[in-house]
Length: 262
Image (cartoon, rainbow, N blue to C red; front, side, top):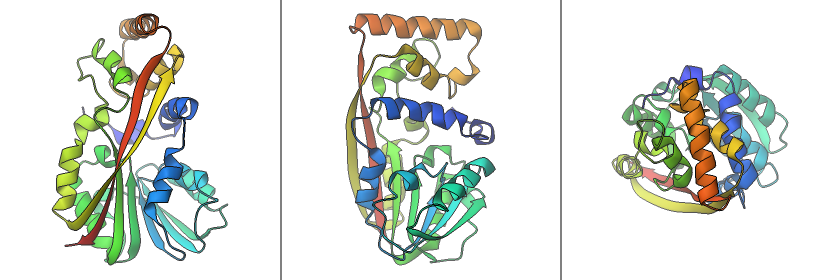
């Protein structure tokens, strides 16, 4: 299911809509957990590819080491602007720069970063091979690449609702566009050491509007006809009624940390 990234993320509205589900039902912080796995060091030079609005940095501002140099990159000019504003207020960030570019052609010199991160963005790439080659190119020999993707079981009970209305698989659409096994294999072709970590939570969702807003913030729901929207609302209501008013679904994220670039 191809996604027009320039339209999907022209503003941060769709991203914030999906984030609302996590903000409402998460029992712990994914951002804090991921930062703890990263192991940033003081004075590091970091590239945040697909930076979004900079939530990762804002949520971890009290856990960051000092003197960080962060280069933000995203296809959305508004996302970059919001992220720059956010990071500009953080005491741990010595310098921040913003770049409205694509991941397949990074505007950085070879071996110039200690850390390259790409969180929940691989499925947007038009050419994942080229983008991963670029991430490897800008990484220093002793640096790390950190990539986060959703597991195929992620929010399965939520995405199953989509398949009852639209002609799509009953899984998180990002895992169809970026299958975890394929991403792992691509990293293994470029790095000698790959560490896979798993983040898990279980959401107990009782609000039909949050589910509907989430599923219609992204294709195919964002392109739904009025009839399809009505059918989706009905499907959500029926599932909530069948499950005693609460849909329980796992939130599962895979975090790959790649080292020793070839």
